[in-house]
Amino acid sequence: MQILPTSVPITYTSGEQIEVYRFSIPVTIGVPLVALFLQAFLPRRLTFFAYLDLPLLVTIFFAMARRNPIAGLLTGAAIGLTQDCLTAGPIGVYGIAKTVVGFAASSLGAKIDAENAGTRALLTLGFYLLHGIVYFGVARWLLSLSQRFSWSHGVVAGIANAVLGVGLYFLLDKLKQRT
Amino acid sequence: MESVLSRYRNLVILVGVLFLQVLGLAVQVKRGSDAQDTRLIRIWAVGAITPMEKGLVALQNGSSNLWHNYLYLRGVRAENRELKEQIEQMRLEQVRLNEDAAQARRLQSLLAFKEQYISKTEAAQVIGSSGSDLSRGIYIDKGSENGVQPDMAVITAGGIVGKVLRVYPSTSLVILINDQTSGVGVILEKSRLQGVLGGTPNGEVMMKEVMSDEQVLPGETLLTSGGDQIFPKGLPVGTIAKVGAPKDLFLSITVKPSANLDRLEEVLVVLQKKEKQAVAADVPRARAADILAQRLPSVPEQPAPVPSAGGAGTASSAAKTAAAGAQPSHPESAGQVSGQAAGPTAGETAVHSTAGSSGTGKQQVADPSVGTKKPLAPAVAPPTAKPQGTVSQPRTPAPQSDTPPPSDADTPH
Image (tube, rainbow over all chains, first blue to last red; front, side, top):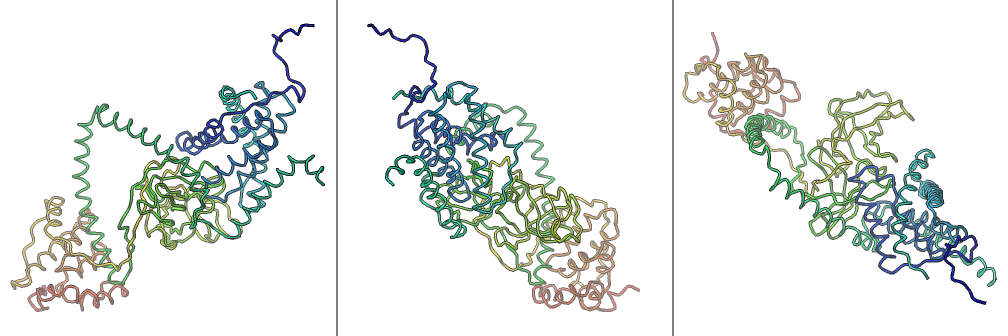
């Protein structure tokens, strides 16, 4: 019996069928660094950029593409801790928030198909809010900083990040390597 | 046990990584502010990010300079002419301000005031931000190699910006005044009410620690009080934008900063400030007289009323002061005359004419017993009158000898 090569695109629905990607070392290091650089550089030139969180989007992208919870949480921790180092505050606030998001994104990415734009946008919105809640919780209850959390602000900023994220993921997809 | 760990391996690692970070946070909180000791991880992170920022800013400046300095020169001649005119105007203004400053120094020296001077600054370029709402900070392109140290004040021509928090070899992190952890001692310019300036989580600047029974009006200017030992006294901070309802016995005062904190490009780091006692500097008289001649060309020459040759200088200066005092429509001129009279021969006169209005200045100086302290003393406020006699006398010994003794010839009949 001859097996015909599949010419139709496969719709991934089960855990076994979902593809896992990897990235080259320059991409793994360079993309988060560029994201951190833009996050520090652009808000002083473009005020609206302060609402965006490029390191978070990169964390979500890498975590969902690798689909490995440990790799996801370590990626999130590394990016978050580096982001903490640039601030005047204590190291660990962004680290904890992005660790949680990295773990959640990779765990979820291993279970659902997150290749289409709509799913990615919704997931990004959800992860942005999760990041905000964890960040607020750590700042408020662990460090006693007078942080305010506004749902309306969070949703609006989350939508903006989701829109940017969809475009950014499309660009970063080109850097993926199949395992 | 092993099977449980392997089954929940991912969760165990997540909890472990989170636990380590919480532990790290707890250590940092327990140690307090780590502003003084910069951690290695911060140096690595800043070292990885800031070179890109520096490069991009340098590229941006280079292209901007090329365009503005070599290509786009339209209207430069006209602008140059206008600027020259402005310089001329400002020179005149500068002379007047110098006179005022000299008077202020004399008064301060009488009261043994100690002043803080900004003696050395370093211009720095803003290359980036902390990129976080939790901490509002900026990175500048000057670090320990340029003499920058933690807790140095950072200012612009408009007003104060913040203070240096962390210093790296070639960059520094500056915490802005709208950060919630910052605190600056401030004073209201008119009411002299003191408070503490700080930021809020959403980036507003507030004046705190002002009791609710105090009266604070929107629009009033806010200056540094010098109480924080970081910012020298008297630097512009901002204006009162809004006075809200009192909370917990304190007023809720929103401040609009003088410096545009969102659009900072270049700043000045105060490397050195000196504290010294104010010393009255002698102002060159000829220069002030030239300016007076330009401003008041119609003032008639007063004949010298003093017959003796030794008192001619003082008499003519007194006559000019009297002339200025007699012209209420020229308050600036009156100030200048007092400044002129505040030269080495008539330091006391300057103090007196400052204390009163132009009219009183005229009366005091035109008093026939000018040059002697006894008749002048009642004309000024008692606290000023006492130290004046004690301090100014040894400082100006020469005029005493030039000044004629009170005689009948000085007294108008």
